[in-house]
Image (cartoon, rainbow, N blue to C red; front, side, top):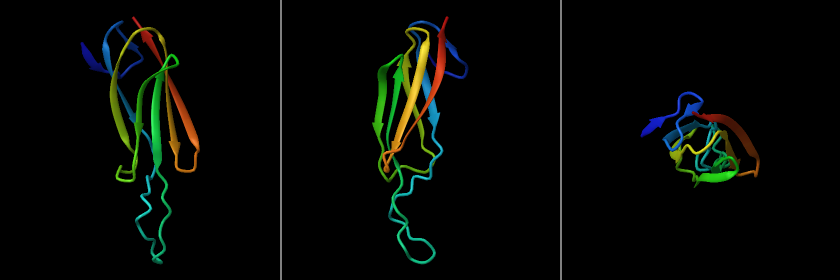
Length: 104
């Protein structure tokens, strides 16, 4: 069985789709401002998700990715626990969000 997670619960062994939307301008470094100066590159270059401490998804992002990247991936619901989402930008700044999932 496969479904998108819209709540916080899933059945054991179920394939769940996880969807993330990261609010970030994802500036490529190729555009110029109104004075003709280059706008510095500022992108999220890494995103990862762990499920109870085990990495279940990782991706490297590049300047061609649009602003506010939407990322969707699947994993198998194995046990009640925590999904932790971590993304890192060009400056090395890391942000983390988490979401609890309950297995019925």
